[in-house]
Every structure is written in structure tokens, then in C-alpha cells.
Image (cartoon, rainbow, N blue to C red; front, side, top):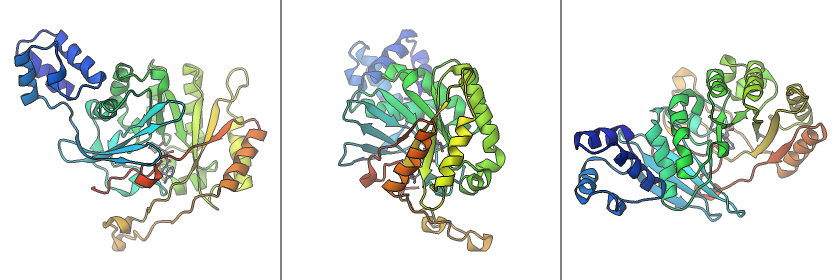
Length: 352
Ligand code: SAH
């Protein structure tokens, strides 16, 4: 819901201020129409139905995976595509994966979103409307900003959305912001006071390989990013998750596991405790060649980008063992929703 538009409409209809709160409460409980909002005067309900759409996003499609994952494809009012995902776990957890931008201005070489055109930052209302869409299906309790876009480039709108997510059922401790290492954003997160979690997409422990995989590393080198994470930990006392996508023959070798363990062990908190916890991510196959998306310009030297292959289950297990043996906690991420292109890094609206 466009909250500014709601406030303006209520004000010009001469409504008391508490109406906005009543409407927001209904939305947070999964209301699907103004008609259901029984504590609003009937006249106001129909006025709002005419003037303030219940969501700023149009749902184009909901896709259901065999494992219970749901992926929604939305369009903003100005026609920009974005996707979000609901993940259902056996233990009852319901986690949503939200987009912070339509497309992404970064160009990580293994990520599908990096190949589509960047449109713009999403507003706080557009971010919340993704959550409310899934809330209309069922109660939700966890949220990760691991959909399309770089949340810390759009940090003010993301934080404004986070302020309201507890109303939808997601406490601040259950929200994770994932970043490529956008330092000004990490600093902003360090200064604000919500107990949000930070996840860092690291993917390579050495600067040269990281720059190759993630060109943003040229702007914010890993060594500076690690320092920013240390400052975050010192101020917020929350461990930082490291995301490491496993690419066969690229970043999954024994020496690379050793280098990662060394790098992360060197960054300890005040009592010598590790401040990082590693999440190894099986790479989900996506076609990252710009030519496939129909706008590569061969004259500008944009040949087919590097093609990847995910690491085998065995090499992921071996990599994890090296980390754990050296005192770095590590887990392997469960892949969800692969059959509907809803898994990590696959969100790139085909409709773009
Ligand atoms: N821009 C933010 C958040 C979005 S991506 C960030 O990069 O952290 C969420 C995670 O998915 C990142 O760690 C990203 O590197 C990873 N990812 C991207 N493409 C992937 C793929 N094809 N398979 C598995 N993970 C991928």
C-alpha cells in the first residue's frame, strides 16, 4: 500500500489520524480487501477502494514449487518487474526473500539479476507490499533481503520497511540484509539501532579473484569490507553471516578453503570469538551470458560472459570440513524452489 497516498487521502476526506493505523493493522493480518475492514465506516471503505489500491504492486504470477516454495512476479505502478519468494520449512518456519531493487546495478558474474537491466530502487511501500502479498497466504516469521538488487544501495527505504516488518510478524532479529560489501550501507546499519542481521556475499578470499567475480570489489576491496564488518560486530554484537557460492574449479579448492579460514579467523571480537559464520551456497545454474538476454553489444566487447558450473556435493562437504576444523562455523545452504527458478541468485524477471 502506498502509505503516503493513504495518509493524503485520509486527510482530504477529513478522517481522524487513527484510521491509517486501523488499515495498516488489517493489512498486517492478511486482509485482502477494504470490504473486510469492518471497523471502518462503509463510505470510507468504498472511497478507499476507488482511490488507494490495496497494493502498489500488481501480481503477474505466483509459481508453486514441489517443495512448497512460492515465487511471485510483480510489476510496479510504472511497469518495473520484480520477484520475491516464500520458503516453507519442515520445522514450521516461513521465510520470505524480498527484492530491494528492480534489477541490480552490480554485475556479479554468476548471478542472474546482474544480467538484467537495472531499473530503480524500490520504495519502502513496494518492499512491504511483497511481504503483505505472502502474508495474505499465511503467517510469516523470517525475512531475508536476498532477492533482486543490493539492499544497502537502497538502505534508507530498506530500513523504513524493516521498521514496519514486526507488525507483519517478522521481528528485527529475524531479518537479514545481504550485501556485496557496500561499505557506506554497512556503516549505516552499524549506526542505526534495530537488531538486524548482516550477511556478506564474500565468494572469494583473495582480492583478485573476488574482483573478477564481483566487480564491486574494485570499489570496496574485501580488506576494507572486513573492517566494516568488524565495526558492525563491535557495535551491534551480532555475528555476520558470510555467503560463499560454490563454483567448481573457481573458488572451491582446498587452498581456497584454507585462505578463507585464515581470513575469517583473523577477524575476532573482543574476547577472541569468531565474528563470522559461513554459509556455503550450492550455485544454482543460471545463464549469465548477456547475449542470452538480447542486449549484448559485441562491438563494445561484450562477449559471452564466463560460464560456471556448481561444485559437487563432495567438494562442498570437503570445503566445509576445512573451515570447521579450523574453528570457523560453517553450514551448507538448502536449495529451495529450483524447479520454478526461485532459488538463490535466480531471480531475474524473464518479463524484463
Ligand atoms: N545483492 C545482495 C543480495 C542479493 S543476492 C548480495 O549480493 O548479497 C543473495 C545471494 O545469492 C548472494 O550471496 C549472491 O551472491 C547469491 N547468488 C547469486 N547468484 C547465485 C546463483 N546463481 N546461485 C547461488 N547463489 C547465488
